[in-house]
Amino acid sequence: MKTYIEKLLKIDRRLIFLALTLLLVFPIIRPLGLPNVNLGTEVISLYNKIESLPPRTFILISLDYDPATRPELHPQAVAILRHAMRKDLRVGMLTLNAGATGLIEELGERIPRDIAPGKVYGKDYVILPYQPNPVAVLTQLGMDLHQMYDKDRNGAPIKDMEVFKGIKSVRDMGLGICITGTALLDYWIAYTGDKFKFPMAGGVTAVSQAGYGPYLQTGQLKGLVGGMKGAADYETLIGVKEKGTSGIDALSLAHLMVVTLIVLANLMMLWLKYL
Amino acid sequence: MTFIKKHIPLALCFIFGVLTLGSYYVPNKASENYLEVMNKWENIVAGFAFLLGLFSLFFSHYNKIRRKVDGWGYSLFVFVGFLIMVIPAITSKGIQMDGATLTGLGWNYRFLFNALSGTMFSVLAFYIVSTAYRAFRIKSPQAGVLFAAAFILIVGKVPLGQIMWEKTLGWTHVGISQIVQWLMEVPVVAGRRGIMMGLAIGGIVTGLKIIFGIERQYMGKD
Image (cartoon, rainbow over all chains, first blue to last red; front, top):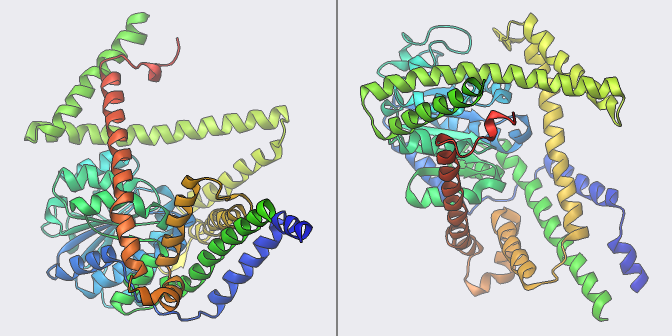
């Protein structure tokens, strides 16, 4: 028995990789359809905040994530964008992350196709180009954004676009949402949220979600979507099931596999030590 | 030479440091105009910093290839990867979508960068699971607390865990989501707030040391 347990503890890690692969592949191909009942309170807060905005309010979405964190954050962006468009809000999208430009293009492509087919570019939404140096951009957004952004991502002047009617800085906007896998949400809170009293919300990876608790308690964040679970929660709230919901089954199984393996390994260690 | 290499940079750092710090607390037209100019300059300098970083990266990897140091073959991929993205970027004039069709840059982003970057990050999941099994040993009370917190969070955050909790411990009438909520709102926030305050104080001290010329490492050694 002892030799058997020792062998199990030193199992080839490639076998663990294989087990995880199998565990992830099946629910992705054929979702189990587990009910997502306990929705996060901070996700509900963001949903309610967007619900409370009057039609044609301008909201700014900063998509600061790259393909590495795409599986967690892209479903959040799609769900929030879908909700904002459904509420007839005006939406501005930008990025402060050079690796995000292609993902924004994907969103730009999807808006007329399936997110909000009736919306018109330049009237209902706009995509601004990437800008380096987040601190300078964020400070400028609080004073006169046209000094920093005079053209959209295709080079068209934005000043006369209908979507920007009455919008000079973040002070004229209803909400800012930063979706990121980096610390950029902290920058948004410090340089625009706090300084210019701009209501901010965020979308972050599950691993960094715990770090934003203080901002939620003080009201510096009006809501927070965390990881794929947050995306699934938001999809449940808006009643559209997409990548967040389909990914949650695989996530469930992988999480439980981690716990099971830790418990098993520790039980085996105790066995070897005391029996 | 000391005047140009030492005194002028220190004076510039002091003047612009004090002005920028002051402009945060003095919201009037003059400070806004000053910040607007500085923001534009910062963006221009950041653009050049990218270029400088690129040259530095190329130089470092070129030297590795020239000297044939261990793993020099990987350095070749730095240049290959750069050219794969930059040549289509130049030919596509930096645009990823031409109407409804992808340009060369857009195609490479979507089907190369996207897939490769996602693959690199997802590999982490396999290492985490393998390490959890092979290395997470609960040998001390601290490790026990860490595991208990992780266990509750993992179980409480996913639907399958919530269902299992309800089936096995539902009779206690203590919801797993309530425990997770308490963990996230009390101990986690307390710990995080302490870290944030420490970081902020450290940042303020370092900033003041740079403005007043006590910290000079940014000027180089000579």
